[in-house]
Image 1 (tube, rainbow, N blue to C red):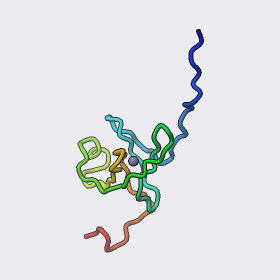
Image 2: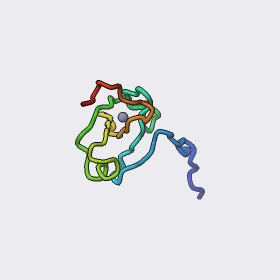
Image 3: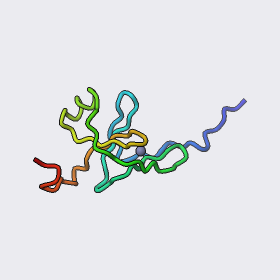
Length: 97
Ligand SMILES: [Zn+2]
């Protein structure tokens, strides 16, 4: 008997934003410039579109990798983590002290 051929699931295209995966499986991505909504796709290829919110409650692993003051955003829907885009320099006056 032949094994079923993988026909629907081809290797997912490498996501250039995807930079890391935590030990619990959480994806870590770099935000696109001015990205406000999650662009993760589910198994059906539907865009998540959850809001990316600044997140302060990351655990030890994130702290170790990105520092205790890391600027981390998290999709409120699928919990994917996003790092700020390095090209997107914070405007002076906003979120600065
Ligand atoms: Zn999401």
